[in-house]
Length: 486
Image 1 (cartoon, one colour):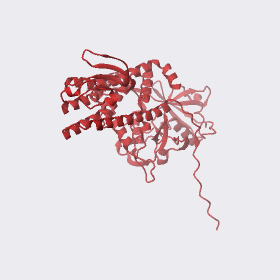
Image 2: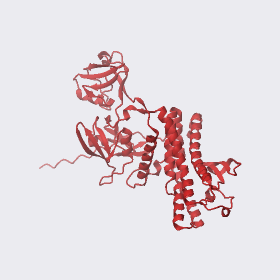
Image 3: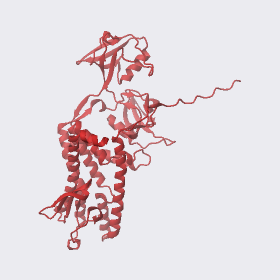
Image 4: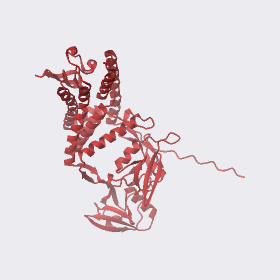
């Protein structure tokens, strides 16, 4: 019911999602279709979707064009290729009357779908390049803004932050994660999540190469499992440094009397850069009754205020309840970047291969339950369509490159599997037994459908809000027993 209500409330986003999802499938099958026609092969059917047809017609070229009920891809029936009648329906053409197809023609026809997906992605990425993508300026850096003292793990327990335990500090620059260089905060998160390092006890471990001042050193951090959108991922408890804005300043408060105004951007406290709101609270708590000097920027003009009165302390957090009457917020600044299409495509290729490598690595924490089916993909596309059309185009480009790579994996029923079969037949000098090929295709199709159902289950769980108990504090470590009296 929640999913149905979501769809009703986002009709336009649904229309865009269906269009671009269908376009991605159409482009892939169009590649197979055009390549086969170019190589003189017989084309019997061009279908978007599997199963019984919703609508269809036969063109003047003798090809049956149809849209089918199961929206899990599409297919082009090429009778001279591998027999896929168990999946694509019976073939009406008498294959014995058709000339054999060369190995090179098979390779061209089979790989053309992925090639067209990449072309489509490149075209979309070109539009994104010209229009520009929105990013958070503060995340386009590898400098740590804040180190959280505690985090809530995936079990709902508040535990000490791995970064704080390891000794990471605000202002540290992370140069590499597990020996792989990083340039942005997203790079750091991605490397940590996809990491496969473990300590002697089997706990997750990641090695950060850190620059602090003029010193560069390696630091071992033991991530904990955090929950993100219903998924369980490795995390270490660090954040980029947003701009710290005074949202409100209460009239007559200490902050107002000192000269602070709503909308001021706070930059330094006693000459030290401000990386997070919690850093201000912690600093003031340590300063006690000593005056502190806060630097700010107001309408492009820098200034300072001196605050000398200790604020009221929050009874739960033991930190200042407010900055002397000012409420603060971390704000991320949008910035437009024009990334060349070839760079966008290359980035997707790298990310997809890293994800696949983590998926098959038994030491990583990435599993099939972290993948997305057409349900999860559709949800992402709908969310992007609601807020940022360029972000939608960028995601569709990402999707098409990923689909191209996945389709070329050497798995039966996928294009890569067909290429492997064609290569084996070329090396054998004769076709593989028909019964063997059909059985293998049917088995792997069943496995593929089972995987889609499995992944879809987790997609639905991510979409439907799950009730969670309130977070609990981790139990205190046991204290050693006192030494016996002598």
